Image (cartoon, rainbow, N blue to C red):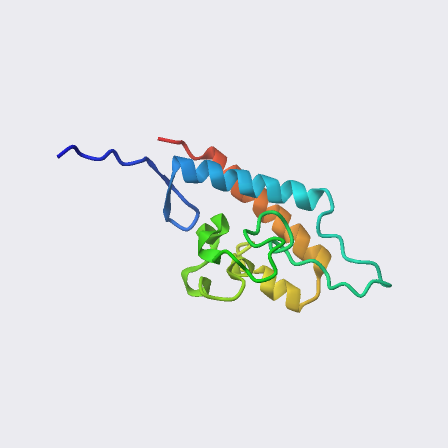
Length: 140
């Protein structure tokens, strides 16, 4: 019986591992999300609009369920799950539990504070740092 060749693993932020292919896929998602935010993708509706404010990650193409009203795809298939703490992976919006900075602030916590601009800045900073960290890790 021939031995199967294992794909190389790359260390992830929380000490987990991912394959080189996973790393490239995740980098593409993170870069796309950063570009979306930098181009104003989460602009809040005008005061005269009755539309709810956009939701970080869920209201962008990053979300597997973007445009699907009934959450067709499980969040477990999302590349962002790599960054969600184990304890939050079963929550309704796991991506809102990603620690964005050393203090552990999350999108969920910042939404409660209603600091949209601060939250978007924290997400952009997290995306930049995560992209830089992943790009600096050697692929074996």
